[in-house]
Every structure is written in structure tokens, then in C-alpha cells.
Image 1 (cartoon, helix red, strand yellow):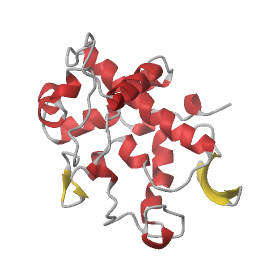
Image 2 (tube, one colour):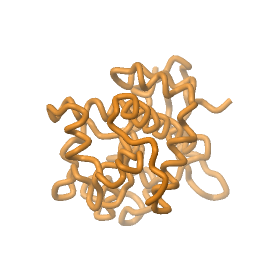
Image 3 (cartoon, helix red, strand yellow):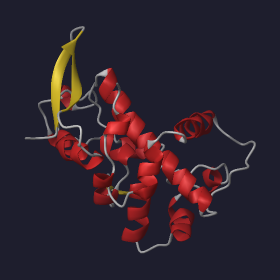
Image 4 (cartoon, one colour):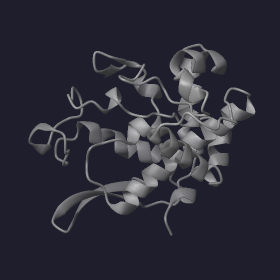
Length: 215
């Protein structure tokens, strides 16, 4: 029996995708296991797909072109290791210099530095923000859950980089409106109990879902 189930439900005439945690021992890895097949599931509604139903593969409305991606700490470590880089080298080559100077580890965008011919070249290592994005309407609790996990992981990355002396913490200006938004998100999640889980985790199966669940 799966520890997590995904179901479509109707609210105010709209089909919404909902996460139901069946087993409280479930981890982020368990969630990803049931979430990943959604990319190729043509039965669920996808707002940007032709006819509203299609696989995400070869989608022309590619979110990777413009996304503001601050990788979660598990992904950050795996990306660096997978590319045989130390953390300093990885940040130098793959993160925006001007954002780093503002205290934000944003992957180089427009398109994403890892995108080649509309294909992700680090797909097995990609960040939670990328893994969870799908243009399917979600229930409020589901949206909050994946949002909270992804941004807690991003906050952990920034804390880790600060502790390693890889990221500035004293910048006072030069922020765009988007920078300010994402910096505030990171700051809001610094005190989340899940940050410590990300700091200790080697992989997503080390991170329980329980601290992220809405009571």
C-alpha cells in the first residue's frame, strides 16, 4: 500500500489534484515517487497543454526558460557532486553572480543553465522546485505542502552556503522586486523545523513529511 495517494477532486466546478498522506512515516522521497508520474499522465488537467491534457515532455511552454530556481540543499549537494565540482566551483559556474552578491543562490536563468534543446541535462538531480512544478490546479493544502517543502529546502541551502562562507549576508541594495520576494521567502523559512532536516539529510528519504503537514 502506498504511503501517499494522489486524487482528483472537484471544488466549485474545478478539478483539483490533492495529496493524501496515508502513513505518517512517509518521507519526501515517498511523495516524489507518486508525484513524478504526473509529468507523463495525460488524464489530469494541465493548463498549458494542448487541449488541457498532455505529457509534460516536449512542452513548448517551458517553465525552465524563466524559472527563479534556488535549489534545495539535497539537490545542491547532489548537483555539485554529480558534476565533480566543489561547492565554490559549482556556485561560480552555475549560479548568477549578481544574485549571489545579494545573498541568493539562483541558478543562471533565461533559459536555465542546465537546459539544452528544451531538455534538462541534470534531470535525476534537479531541485524540488523543478520536481514539484506541474501546471495542474492543486488544492490549497497540496499547494501549501509542496511549497513549504521546496522553500524550506532552499532556505537550508542559503544557510549552508552562509556557514561555509560561500554567500554574502550583508547586502543592503540592488534587489529587484523578484529578488526581494524570494529573499523574503528564504528568510521566512529559516526558522522552519524542516531546515535542520535538510541540513542533516543525505537524500530525500531522510526527510519525513510530518513536520510539513498542516494540522
